[in-house]
Image (tube, rainbow, N blue to C red; front, side, top):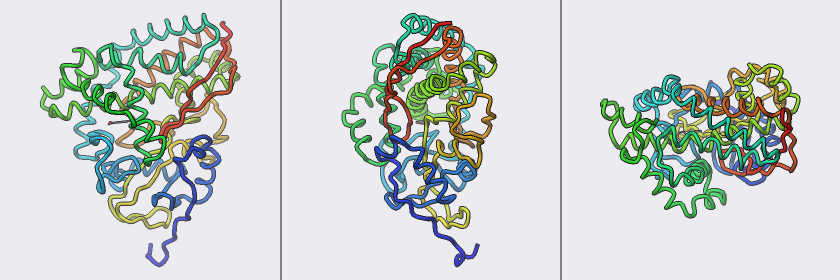
Length: 400
Ligand code: QZP
């Protein structure tokens, strides 16, 4: 397009990291999507895309929409990242493909097969205990418990200190946003948490049979260096807990607030696995990520300079009425192909098989015991610059 024809992205005077926005993002997502295919947020000097037709292809176009300058609001080209940058998330090919190749193998279906029995046994036991109690907090007593019972063992972490894992994730996901009160509060006393996390990434700290040891085996195979192995173990510890805790919590919230869908799952248990995709489409645990343009580009006639930060609204794309029929409905029979809750393209979630296995085991264990859920107190939200989650969801179950 001729530069004279270039259109200007409309300004939207919103702060997507404010308490107001994060407490109730959906009306703001409508505004973002309905205003234009790409908008400018003058509050931060960044651009934003919230329609599926722009978000999905931008995620696939790493050549232009790069991750290497950070997937948060900070531009690594202009300042030091909050933590040493990731060799997986905050990097592009060719380097990315070498580390990603290792992680693809570490988290492959074959590697997961040997975890399956333990994941199942832990889910059955927890479901027994909770259904026995009738009333419990589906977040505090279930979603925040089950992943911590299975994932750290799968990685090969020592038993003590695991209480540092969720706070660490909370910090990192807040650090993708601006230095607001959410960020400051979660990172205020971070030193002991960071010390523990970094110590667990060392070879000596990891059991010989877990995901962590598999990463270190790639050092012996000459695929990665020792300092790279540490950063990849850190990626597991960052990406593997909060996300699956929220994925489980969201799935239970979806079913508890849509009793007809739980009945539909009872009627057709083959919908168990698809229902997890629908839950994370409906309320995406990871709401946003930034990319940075590697060169001047154009989106629907809008010129972006090289080095533009672009905020991609995954959660809004997953509810775009231009893409989905009745997008606010939680419908486990829906075809969810193309949802971006796990991203899209080369950075698509490498741990998604672990998340899917946890959900299949835990929701399946509940399905065999619970006839219906009743939400007995207003759900309480937990705010984070990147994650959409609940702090509490009090439920009462009716056993089968
Ligand atoms: C976090 C890393 C939802 C994802 C962005 C989670 C995530 C993935 C990778 C890393 C961190 O490589 O450190």
